Structures are given as C-alpha cells and as structure tokens.
Length: 540
Image (cartoon, rainbow, N blue to C red; front, side, top):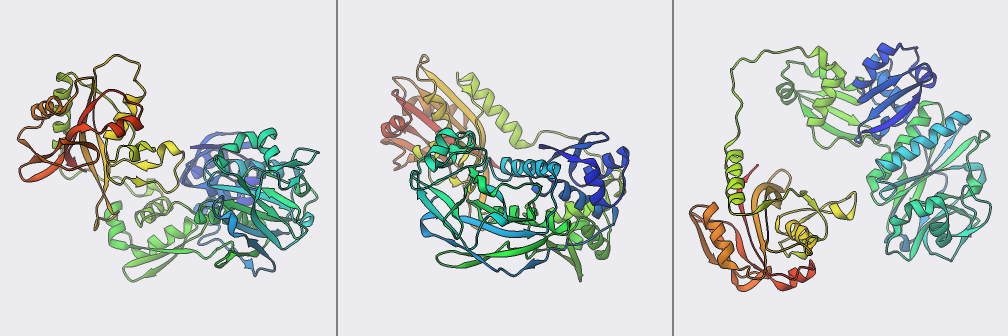
C-alpha cells in the first residue's frame, strides 16, 4: 500500500460536485483507495500497488465519477499524430532500452499543482517504477527544448550539463558521485560504464534518466506545455506510465501530441493508447459472484469502472485503458463487475450445506514430517520461495527467472529447497558443527500443458553438515521419515559421483539423496561436507 494525499477542493472540482466526509469515505474505497483521513484541505488515502493510476488526484476523481455515474465507459484520450521523433541509438539497449515521449499542450499549472505533480512522479517511481529501476518519468518545459531528440548511451565523462537543483555543470559521473539524487539512485547502474542520455536537436542534455533532469527544462508556473519523457526496462510498464500522465492532463483539457520513437529496427508511436480487449463469459462471472446478472447489467457495471464494455451474446467484451496495469486474467473483470455493482448490493446468501473445517490431508502429512524431522535432531528453517543466484550455484535444474524482480535477491522462483538451505549454512560457518537443517515448503517447476506452464509442489528437504556427513547417515534419516522409499542409482553433477541416488516410492521418482559436490559447497563458502535429500510430498 502507498500513502497519497489529494487536495480536496481540486478533487471535488474534477469530480464535479462537493462531497461530504461520509461520501468520500464511502466512494473512495469502492475505487480501491482506502481512506486514512479526510479534512477540509486534503484527503489521505492508501492505494494498492496494482493501481498506479490512482496515485494522483485525476485518477481517483476519474474512478469516482464512474461510480457516481457522472461519466461511464472508456475515458476519452485523443492523441494527435506525431510531428517529431526520438532517435534511439543501438548502444542504449544494454543499459535502459525503452523510451516513451509525448507533448502535452495547454497546461495551466500553479505552485500547488507543481508540488502535486512531483508527488505523483515520486510515488510512481517508488511503486510502479521499482525505485526508478523499471520506470522513470521526466517532465520538461517544452518551450526550453528543441526537437527532434536522440536517446543514447554516453561515457561518464563524455558530456556535462547543469542538473536540476545545481548551478554548475557536472558530468554524468559527477552526478552519480556528488548529486543527492545521483547517490540515491546510483545502484541502478551497478556494473555499467555507459549511461543513458536524452539530448535535444542542439545536442543539449535534456535528461540523465533515471537520475535527474537538466536545470534548463525546469517546470514553472509560466510553463504552457510539457515534453514528457519516460524511460525504463519494461515496454508495457513505460507505456502505462505515459498513459497515466497523458490521461490526467487530457481530463483537464490539455492537448496530447504523439512522438515517433525510432529504434534501430522499428518505429513506435508514443504513447500507445489503443485499449486492450479482454472477454468474460456471463455464466462464468455469475458462478464466481454467486449472482444471476444479465450480460447488459455486467456491461453497465464495467462501464462504471471506466472500462469499455459491449455485450457479445453470452459474453461481455471489455476494453481496458492502457493506464490500467492490473488485468492479468478474466477473473480480474469479475472483480470489476463486483466493484461496479457494489459489494453491498450483491446480497447475503446463507450456506445451503453444513460444512466443518479441517486440515487437508497434505497439511496433516507435512505436520507429521516436521515432527519426525525435529525428533531426528534437525532444526526447521523457513525461507522464501523467491531466491537469488544461489538457485544457479546449487545446480538444481533450471529455476524460473522473475522477469522484473524487486532486487537480485528475489530474481528466481526456486525449483528446489537445497540452494536456499545451503545459503543459510553459508551464513553460519562460524557456528559449531554439526549443523542439521530441514524445511517443508513450496517449489515451482516447469510443466508443459498446464495453464501457467508450471506446477507448485510441496517438498521436504534436509541438510546435514559436519566432518563425517555422508550418504549412509542422510539415507537413514530419509528412511525413517518416508516409509517405503527405495534408492536407485542417479548420475548427477549436483552430488559426488557414486554417492547419490534417486528416491523412489512405488514406481514413482519423488526426489534425490546424496553427498553434495565439493564445487557446489565451495561456491557457497562451505568447508564442511554436506549430505542432503529432497523429496516431493504433494502438489497444490
């Protein structure tokens, strides 16, 4: 959740009516803005991270107007054809590959609005932009720059400019070392020897993204038009940010003009504002909601959520604006239908069947395994399903890489528990041995043909580290906790050859057991021998 504050009078002006404190506290949560406080001057809200469009007054007002029925359906966003372009050089691809731009003409901005615009930028940077690593936004006074533009990578001492908030020229390297923002966000360029730069037609530095704008483009109360520049590592995330800013100012009467982005291998019109289309079945939605709504009623509810909607037989086709980033599956449309109708209007249903809650068979089994491992002298660990480079160090197959991780520590979804327990051992090398750990937890493996291409399993993993750790010891522990297990030969570079085996229950291979290879232990900085087993006990 992200805390934001809206100017109350500006919010009510955009909605088109005065709203009491009680009305605000009722309406905003229906727009997925939790209300912390309302006073005469401002509204303090908590916004979920999947709705970056609600981090600003315009976005929240747009949603509330839909709930009130003042405006329904897809918000209008007219983007005039591009009159200029940005040339993207090939060398920037390895640093920060994507850029989106637009002109926003006819803006009228006060000191308070400049402050709010800065707040929106920083909230978007923090959440949607992953602290500027994924997306960063630059807003410039369009009258102070000359088109066309270029976007390329430059060396640290190759160019100099006066950054925002300073009066003397600084090189890009100086900015990272001496400027406050440079020091705050230098982590974005770890291991990089060239930096992205946006230049105008006169070869002047407009921006050093995602760190700082040039002082010459500073937005003031006399600014009449913006040049919007958004860079990042994710195409759709950058486009969503561009659409958020453009939609906000379009709602206030500004004119939006596209900019053509000329990549080495293609041309892209920015922003890409065509809505995405997703369809939901009427029967499926009613089943999930426990309702008997008609297709037309669902379409109206979706329109109140500021989505385009039309009935197509037993389905409702929905147009999703590009500033919405929270639609991954048709079930998300079901949530929008419920919000559009209002949860309080769905009614209360009494259960028709008496049920009694109890633990699942898998929960009973895993609790039993925990008791058995504790009785064998092993300490239980509780680690994360997401992990870092240790997933590769342990040679445990091919883990699934996270496309846009928050940090390198969470860049993989583990497909084995062995790597994370080894990471725990690596942090405890100064403690007495033996060290014996176990964990019962989730792993995610690839599976072709499934809906997501993956399957989630519950595995039991145990590691024993001491000078005499070996296959015989760990196999005897395994035999004590997993009845009916048999061992068969296993060639694996994860274990010492001849000192490992497959674990078979019935005719099914459920895991592995053995002495971990010294090269793997060395990669983790572990000097003691380690024996381990990992077996699958169920799927979820």
